[in-house]
Length: 496
Ligand code: BES
Ligand code: ZN
Ligand code: ZN
Image (tube, rainbow, N blue to C red; front, side, top):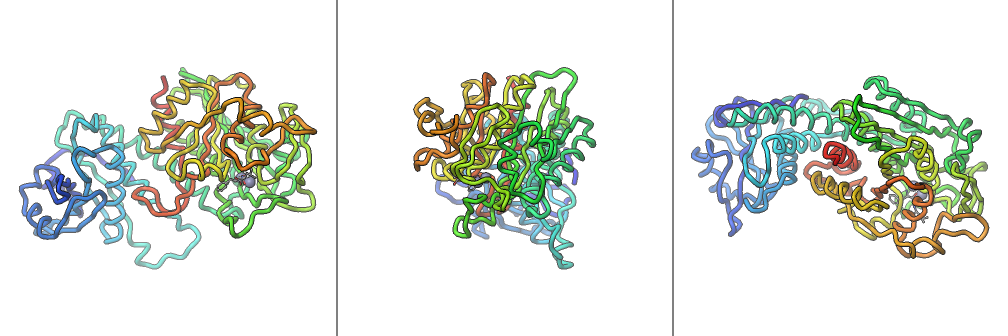
């Protein structure tokens, strides 16, 4: 679906449903409607009689003559942000679809706090497109369900001068939303569909379509080449692992950036098996990092971002079996460092150690890994923030900024020396893969990864707590969030 940007009088727009934005007064009752062209309408009066309050994400359908309006609350004027626009666009689009409307219009709201019309257009388009995501491939839909579909979204601006930049921004939003939804598809689809082989073939498809390079290294070859971290995790599985390397290079790149993704297509825990009590069935989402890397490369290529990007994905299951690694096994990683595997469920750091070491050969300006790495991330930050760890302050600051802008917020955790040492050193090997304490599990995992980055500028994003949403949010449906894609694309777009 294409998001259109048009100019003209809002009250005359022909879409089946027009969104009116309601602001709330300090007393928490309706203050005013936006845009002004409809504020003088009977709509204002109707909204008052319907007790519309303008509270954030309140949504009320109101007819005026033959026109249908959806009055959506944005809260108080002083609280206006781009994220609130994403939210109300999502709330409105879903409500419209639920009522069977097919075309919906939004006003391109102007306010100095929001910045340029392009930022507003991007936020509205992203919010609407992301909210409409549904994973329907595996179920039979009723006729009614099939017919409920938004087919046209239009943003209407009154100032013609800014429309071309708004149009570009809406197109960009579309590419980004498509990428996020692709990641959500990969994450939502169960592990009997999304196998390492499937991820490798998707990587090749994306690379072919966007005309960039992709190489995949299958399990047998990984064994030969000494990818001991991945092999240790993969050796218990009937589905052969795949090491996936994507390489997109623009003509005049600003920088070379490596993105490493954890692609555990199902994490049973291995011999240290998880239980129903700790929601083993959710562990299909343990490849959310890999999904974010694939989707970010697709978006970056479509947007022709001026970068040399390298996507590095370790795709494998973590299974118990007769051939699985056992707690106490020692493996030799690609870097040559040996690791005592004291818990087979701490497998993410094992596969990522090989990805990070592999990244070094590209001599990247920055390397970012993204992974559903630790349950402890939920303890530390809850589902409100991605755990960020980095050896470079400037990189960490830029990621933090992009997190704020996209509302895929990150919070930096320290990598102080004291979190290394005994927490990660083994008695019989160079490292051990668990600390054996309940302290700072997210950080000690980060410290483990740090052993494999050498002198690269590096940041680690632990998305374990944010990749799967336990509840429906305005533009993140319950389930796979597709987190990381908007954050990484924004980081690249605002690279300094
Ligand atoms: N994939 C999990 C982390 C995870 C847990 C992601 C919950 C999303 C939700 C990871 O491989 C894991 O099992 N980590 C262990 C590490 C522990 C054994 C040191 C954990 O967090 O319990
Ligand atoms: Zn695990
Ligand atoms: Zn895992």
